[in-house]
Amino acid sequence: MQHSISIGGSLKLRRLHMSAQAQTASGQTTRRHLTKLVYAAVFLLVTGYTFVVGLGAYYGHLIRAQRTGLVSFLAAHGQFIDSTFFFAQLALILPFFRPLPNLFVGSSNSAASESKLPKNIALGLLTGSAVFILFAGFPGSRASSLVDFLVSNFYSPWPLVAAILLFLLLPAFSEIFFRGVMFARLTEEISPLPALILSSLLFAYMWPVFSFPVGVALGCLSCMLFHRTRSLLACVVANSTATIMIETYLAFRALK
Image (cartoon, one colour):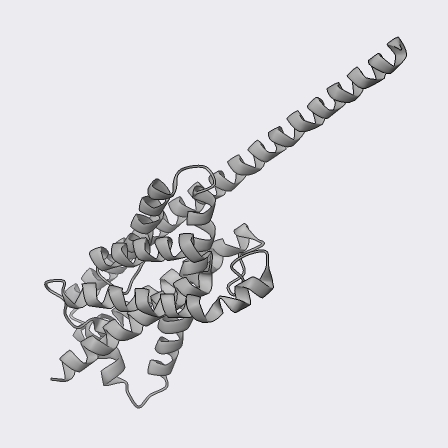
């Protein structure tokens, strides 16, 4: 009897020890994930600031050297250059967060995700359209340098390269990081609202296409969309839709 009691007690102690080890491992994993998020945010901010300062200094050098042709060229291609740099930043940090979230699967049940695909795409289209409406009503919306670049280089291959980067690659990479990685992992530790605010502010600050208020609107709506659907594809559709509609709207205004 005493022997059986001692065996039962040792089993309980072993289970408690294993549970404590699992909790410790889970806590260490969480801290590691949060540390990587902080490092990624600092990397984006520092490299982005360095890029802007360096580019501004280069502009100043060109102006002092009276190289107006190169200044005009850089000004016309400014948004394309900014977008390429931001894409490179995301391409550098995303491999540190493997395995990356699946772009097309919103839950562990792939069959359920596939059945919700049309609905998620429709929600993405509606969200992108809402961002466009906000942009069109925002005071001071004007043609961007990207529109000038697309119009002036219409018959060259560069507009196609810019379109693939801006309407496909950049939305996909940015939504994978800011919604699929940053927002998703922050919501595991804090409530959704602070996670939405933090990820949206960083996204708006880094996003090279729109003004800051429109970037905040897109970031917040995309976070809410991801929180509801758990579908990154819906967020990518929203981002691409907003970008396409806004740039098309600005192009038509520039041609008037």
